[in-house]
Length: 227
Image 1 (tube, rainbow, N blue to C red):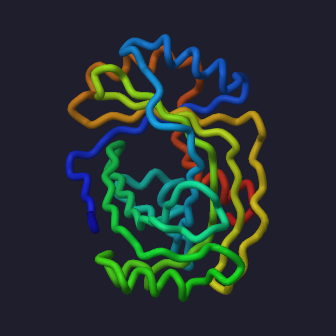
Image 2 (cartoon, rainbow, N blue to C red; image 1 turned 90 degrees about the vertical axis):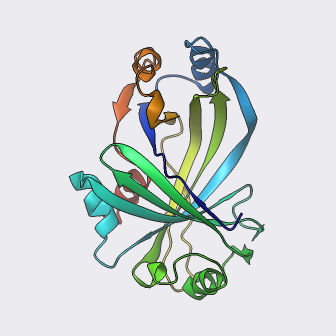
């Protein structure tokens, strides 16, 4: 698979908590309607986020612009390593519905020698839109540990993100140290395709956290002081 397009769209309902432990959250999720069970092993998620010189993606998100696109490169596992399966993602948002385009990239090494030229070379060797990265620059690296749960019907997925950290990333081979953001912060997300929206409130109403629209990208930029 060189390119994957999500044409159906899905909802992502986010909840933020600092009061409950990971174990307490897991117990709550496993008692939700739908009989949620563990899916996959927990794994670390690494993202390089891109934005324009004017930080358009950030400002559009904060302003709640209905149509917007977020650009990132994602991989799993170790942060500083030879990355074997990186993926360029264009995450489109239309109202409250999200769509993704995914493009496989060739391997690269993420270390102190990493810079924008490495990114441009990867994109040029892939099927991704060649012009997209000419409009944006890498600005942020973030990382978190994710645990996955799936309902028995297969329609609803819940993830728990912990150990959130982030650092600035510029175009000239400089990666700032990642800073842990609030040790007890957990981000819970309920994800499902748009045709299954009718039953979702039954699940989300039983999650004892406050819903948030703020993205990890926006929160990290503000906490680090980049915006």
